[in-house]
Length: 263
Image 1 (cartoon, rainbow, N blue to C red):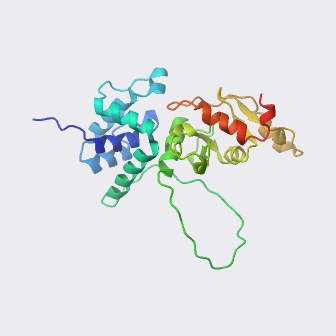
Image 2: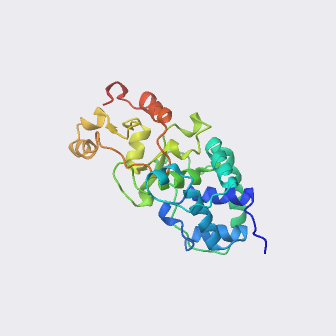
């Protein structure tokens, strides 16, 4: 019997899912692996094996001493390189296929991937017409960034995904090339995400956390105590995508309010 080769589209979808899953979840019992198997008409074990083959191409996984399977094909390597060179195009293409296929899938329970909660006091009229813009690849970016830090806040270690945000280092609107690049993100708890976005904290290329004097010397004691403990600490090491020096330094130099006092 002839072996059915993986197509480019199937490989793209598999890699799209791979980047969103922590290494420890590459198992055929994972509902999302089963979902992909359903979409492309392959067995659960076949898809799980393909994702484990990708792990052998993953520099951070290999450096950590963990091993994937050794069966990565030339197409796997080609598609891997394409993702790294053009995240947005590859993510957009995979996401369209993934979303279209969802319509025909049986209902099944998947892991909570809720979008970050944000509250702003309402000050408008009692009736408004709203336009909702969906950012293509936003869910991918969130999940890939969280997976890069083992679904923990990289500063505090908080491990409940409902409390975590995927924080763009260089904002979505300022860097089209790196919008979907997981190396352009930190997994942060909601409080630290807000502080990072406001330039009240920053993270340097060596992983060192800098808390601004506005927080460390705050007039409020609990605020000072809460943030000061993390000053000069190191973040959790990313497990898949190393920090991008240019992007990290951009935040240090353009957003952080104490940029002249980086330590």
